[in-house]
Length: 257
Image (cartoon, rainbow, N blue to C red):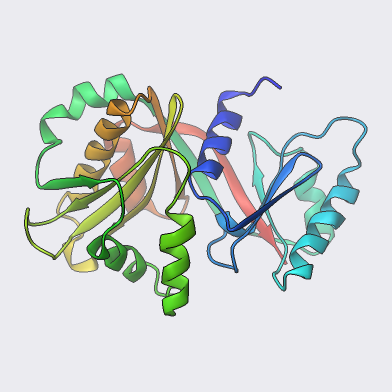
């Protein structure tokens, strides 16, 4: 199947955040990771051929999650999901959650604009160290409270089977880190994710420097385009990405019950 640009992005973002368990139902990617994060615990919906009944697929997905003690969640992308899916889910009692914007950028333009900032107190690593983990888990106060959750983060979610780099901003040899991010490269596409800045360090340009470093790393790893997802309600983050040159691609949202 030939993929549109939006579908390529959706597939890259899925590969960048690997789930503990995956299954395929009706061509959809069904993901489960002990309830940790929406992306790793939702069904990524794709177009169906005419021989597959949409409601039968939805029922099978619901059974998959209920068998694991998880609530059913669907990732409904304007670029990838059947147009009939969201109305069907709403009729079945699902509610829209986390409206999300997907942005993309051509790396040649980004790199030419911001090359001079790349080395400014940025460290790039192939694995997340303790300081990186501390900033990331601190940025999401509603999860990562239990040691086993952080272990799952390290062992599964941050271990894609693709080239990845983790960026930190802070003193060159200090343990204190102000901001972080990750990039995962899937062929021509790179996915930026896990962007976080300590509350006391916000508004100082750290996030922009992390974006710059990750785009440079993506280019070095062979990508020519990059994408990311940001909550529609997160205006501060959207401004950072717009300044870096990202432009809108499409939107997705989760539906859960």
